[in-house]
Length: 147
Image (cartoon, rainbow, N blue to C red):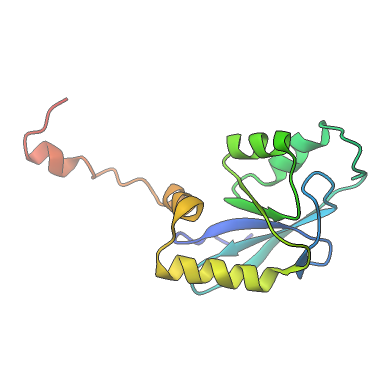
């Protein structure tokens, strides 16, 4: 598996053809997961599911959400309220797009935002991937700051 891009993010797309977003989150047959940085992107994983009938069965959600571990966002056609809550609780931002949205174009948009300075969920995701700076309190301590 590719090493994570430190100034980038991992993003999943609900897609059966790996070129367009064409699936509802709960009924998706597959996720194409990309590692995306300001100057590069790479498909790192494709996860496929069996028995994806849209039957309102909530039991399939935890498995799908678990496959998105490490992802900052998931692009899909639609996502139910219960799934939205569970995704957000696990740190994954659900993003609804129109059917047929081109994955390459969406990646290009993310790369542009990463290069120019991300905002919103993307800024949070990038910050969460940065290594913790253990020296960040040294300057405060040198100035005599105390708890």
